[in-house]
Amino acid sequence: MNWKLTQIGTDPTIAFAADELQYYLRKMNRASRVTRILTDGYHDVNEHSLYLGCDPAFAALLPKVEDPYYDDAIYINVSNGAGIITGTNPRSVLIAVYRYLRTLGCAFLRPGKDGDLVPRCIPEATPVYLSEAASYRHRAVCIEGSVAYEHVADMIDWLPKTGMNGYFIQFAKPYQFFQRWYNHADNLTMPAEPITDHELDGMHDQLRAEIAKRGLLHHAVGHSWTCEPFGVPGNGWNVETGEPPESIAACLAKVNGKRDWWHGVPLNTNLCYSNPAVRSTITTAITAYCEEHPEVDYLHFWLADGSNNHCECERCRELPSDYYVMMLNELDEKLTARGIDTKIVFLIYVDLLWAPKREALRNPDRFTLMFAPITRTYSSSFTVPEEDIAAVELPEYTKNKLVMPSSVAENVAHLREWQKSFGGDSFDFDYHMMWDHYNDPGSLAAARGMSEDMKNLEKLGLDGMNSCQVQRAFFPTSLCMLTMAETLWNKETKFSDIVRSYFTDAFGSDGMKAWRYLSTLSEWFDPVYLRGEKPAVDMDLARKFADLPDYIRAFLPTIHRNIADPYINATVKKSWEYLLYHAQACVLFAEACEFRAAGRQEDAASKYDQLMTYFRQIEPEIHPVFDPTIFNSIMYRKFH
Image (cartoon, rainbow, N blue to C red; front, top):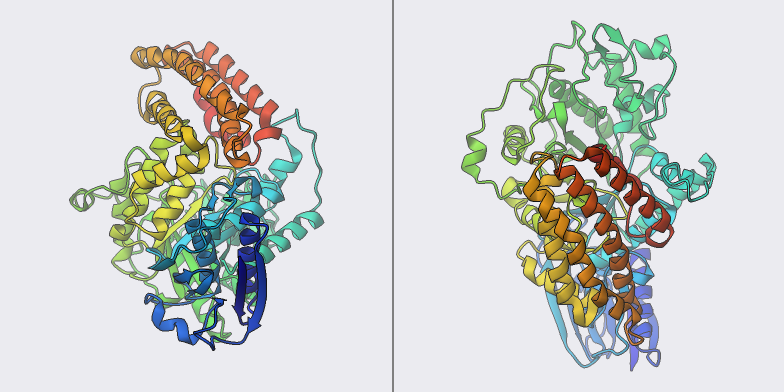
């Protein structure tokens, strides 16, 4: 087939969208010819051409959104290779291109080219008509874990393929995430690859360019503002061995009678926020950053990481959240005076869960509320009834003696208190794939919980999700990630439909067998137990874990048969290969869990160590989909 692809305008994201459409059309049918035309607008409705881009003539075709820059809607009307693909902004046009390709049979199963499932024919005559707006504004991922440059670049590339629209590069410079990978300190079987700050800066700059190329909403920084403005690097949770200089010590929070780094970590050290000079130093630095980085759409201004670490001096008498809002207002004044329209994300997290009593934001349009219930349980979802939330009696704020809430109801009750004084833009910042997915080796229970949470964000008054997570979160499947993406795009999407589509695409004709197998793993591994919400010793569970290795081994012939199939698609084969590595790991993990549940702690530790040895040996093969470093940081203490 001959395609006449007419690109409207020269916007680089729309040009990239045209490049991608051309690439995949040619990959589906190498005999296809794609002629590219550049035009300044939509002129001839009768011309047999596929128009791609934004044009005033398309406005009436698109669903209405609150703000076309931040909110995504798409319109696709294509038949016999001609028609229109458009969106509310260039990023939406790119999302629409990938959505069109998906209707032609493509699937983007995981980041990287080996995650692309591309049919070898095009149902060219099949008409495709879609007119949709995303259910939620915020559909983003935040960098975490141990990463190579390629892991992050592939994630950024994959996001719009799944309908996601934003990426968050955490900290002033995200050095620590990359150093974990390149130093290989947690895996001595892989030689260290020393990396310089200059190389890290180059990676940072290139990732910013990749975000811009796709028109993704760019989130930046976060915790660094309590140290960077004072000349102390905030690129991770690095430990300072010496005493802080006197000039800096005077600005630090006084805890237990001393102004010092909190357990030696500047990033975790709060400041003396009643001091006007401290507040001014921070807000001036943020203003300068926003001025220097106009590419940032959402600048995150958070206080220090950690909890129960606020200043106890006689001047710091207000709630931390009151001082925080005070600084937010001061920051808004400085940004407004300089004509800077960057959105500022403020954080509801640990001590800041307790809403302010005296201060309120004077310019709500400047700000986006970020609800970060880091101590919540994932054994319950956001389906909690409103009456249960209303019944919660929140404890009074007691400085540096707080017990953080684990129940969903109590966390949401804190959110409700903030919402009494702030009704503006907001999103959930959650940790499903930072650590909780490791508690579900089968991935089905985690994905079901993700579906429930994403469906109920609107009920909580939240307009989406920014997922704080490891980038390598696709082992054994991508189901949890794709469930997040698809449900954020359309909150009415049925989880069962996502499951059926994913397993058919990822595992081919035996997809439903893989689904039943992994569903059983999710049930038998018991995520509630692995979260530590059941007694560690449970003989009934021990017997159940003892049966798991035989069940896993019984499924191995199905895995091997698919891997050996000479006609299987390469992307599908890779899914089965990952599942084989996963099965072998799960045998060891089940045995470690059996010993733990039986009270045989030394045996549990030994078997767990065998599991980690195996993970380190196979990391060169599975590194795009699994992060052993973070898995070990979560699981080690449960077995030792």
